[in-house]
Length: 173
Picture 1 (cartoon, one colour):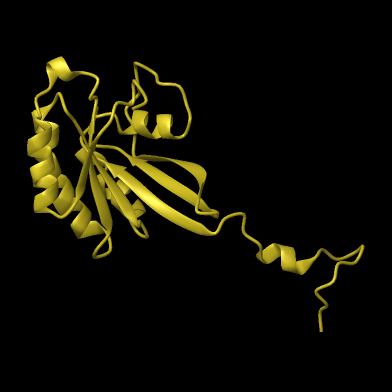
Picture 2 (tube, rainbow, N blue to C red; picture 1 turned 90 degrees about the vertical axis):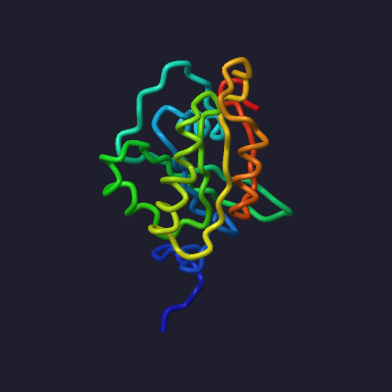
């Protein structure tokens, strides 16, 4: 019988079962190339905005721990490439995701159209049924170049029972 007490020669076994968080949530960020997925993740992680970003090849991730109502939440956020040639790599990382951020660029209508025509279907095909999704319009600091009206994006979100938000990774909004 092994005792749970610490001895000079034996570590306290009960400490091996301790976690530094109450909940772990795996989230994935998807969307076309160059919509700002990586920049959003970097800013959320507390990093400085970089005006020039290298496209994500395959997949990358960051971890951030937050506290909500006295619970420590560990967020594991996976940044995916928007290029179709990496789909076979990225979709294997969707397993176990509890949430998805569908990102488009408000200055690029095609990136928005692909939310409906590609990304929602893609997520439904490769994640568990009922995974939570939100639609994020990035680059809201570029109002003069806007190609996607926020009301149209709101309507798409309503059609799918989702929420829609706009942000600017550049301005940290």
